Amino acid sequence: MWQWFHKLGSPKWFYGIANRLMPWLLAGGLIVLLAGLVWGLAFAPKDYLQGNSYRIIFIHVPAAFLAQSIYIMMAVAAVVTLVWRMKLADVFVKAIAPVGLVLTFLSLFTGAVWGKPTWGTWWVWDARLTSMLILLFLYGGAIALDRAINDEKSAARAVAVLVLVGVVNIPIIKYSVDWWNTLHQPATFKLTEKPSMPMEMWVPLLLSVLGLYLLFGWLACLRMKTEILLREQRTRWVRELVLAGRK
Amino acid sequence: MHPIRKKRLTILAFLVAGIALAVGLTTYALRQNINLFYDPTEISAGNAPVDVRIRAGGMVEEGSVIRDTESLKVNFRVTDYAASVPVQYVGILPDLFAEGQGVVAMGRLNEEGLFVADQVLAKHDENYMPPEVADALEKSSKGLNKANAEKAAESAAY
Image 1 (cartoon, each protein chain N blue to C red):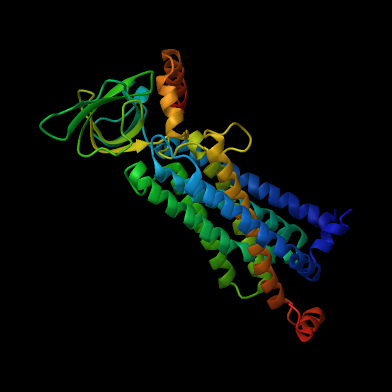
Image 2: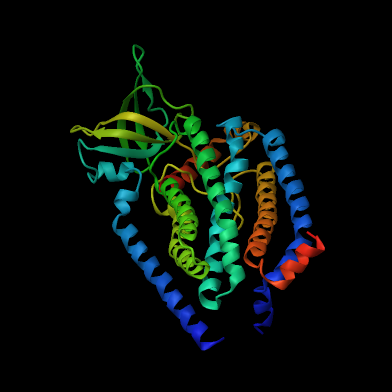
């Protein structure tokens, strides 16, 4: 029963799978993301109150959505690292942490740019904004901790524990707007219930989120491949790969 | 599953559950500090400190905005449809400030129960709609407006 799971842990096997997946992820991601962004930024109707400035939602929401998803993925990989000691899980965490960091920063930045004209302030220390800032620090901390420890295995375990501890922040981010009084409004983009926006705004937003997911998948594969080659450079299959001159 | 892995998994489950419990209790204890603002019900019940910089949040009551003709002084009432608090502010209001819209005001509550604000932020709700839809809603019957007010009251209750 666990066989497929252990096979998943083989870097060589993953390398092959990633090579086959990547063109699809890249093409699909670019098409879907571009469709969503062009539709959202140029064609979707404007908002009755905010006018055109609401359009930053088509960047803000996908970035914030992915920033949290990536952290959850990292936490799952951290459990795999700690329980099964699977090398690939650690490669995954290492490869995607900087992507999460950039997306978290992007969501904070776009939020601030939108907040100035809408709320009247760039920043306010409410629960949503603060917990998102903590997420940024968690990503930064995971990356720094990984760099600070030279031994690959100890670094992997330390980072996994940190990531796992930080996962309690994720429900706090999600429910902060419901649990406490915040300046940030509750979620507009909802998957499980009726969204608080009309379809002609919601569909391009959904496309942007999906497109960014696909592009993230491509980027994760690319970064993982690089990391695998670096770590497995002494193995025979990598040498053969290099000697054969193939990608 | 291998017994060692099972053991590791159990330890991790306890670790995460323990941290979640600790963080949960801490945030629960600090909930009043984490809340960005006091709502009008709390202020009129006397739960908000007097003459301390606090934030008050709620909806701007319909028909309550009085602008001074000589200066930038504005008086309005902030309501959560259960209680309301008078607010005085001197300065430029954000674009989204309007009657029936959410605001968060920062300032001090004086002895007479007047909230003297030095900063007013607009609080946007999660609803987005095209201008035509908003117009159509505006034009439709008063019954709908009432339904909207009820919905707003619900969202203002947090």
